[in-house]
Image 1: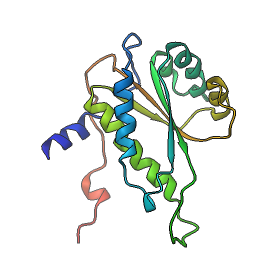
Image 2 (image 1 turned 90 degrees about the vertical axis):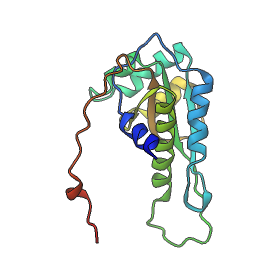
Image 3 (image 1 turned 120 degrees about the horizontal axis):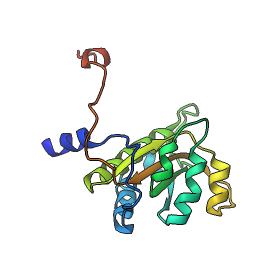
Length: 175
């Protein structure tokens, strides 16, 4: 159990990547395998992933995440995982306002990021990007619901930042 909490404490959003060190294909596939094992409503698995690990493609994709002055660090990031939402097939569900897919994707991404951390990689989950430009750069013409992009690589420094979190009493009611 302590190994899990150590992993949770090690995972952080990295914004300073070593541009000369690229994750291996095996490492990135392991991250996707971890996401694949995540639970989802009615086992719908409403996700798909596009892994970008080609140096030229990564370089071309980076500007697509640099919108509104954000995510400049992607210039040095060697790899990205594009997270797409797929149709969720919910069996016998009658809660039309419940957005299970976004919850399920969040759980899958947590699995993916912890798998990356376990392998010595760093990640940053990005919600700011230009999905149309990104799909164009990737040569994908069919419609995709791009929900997140995850930067993946080796941190330029191994120094972790102190985690600043709300106090437990602020976020928990124990009855």
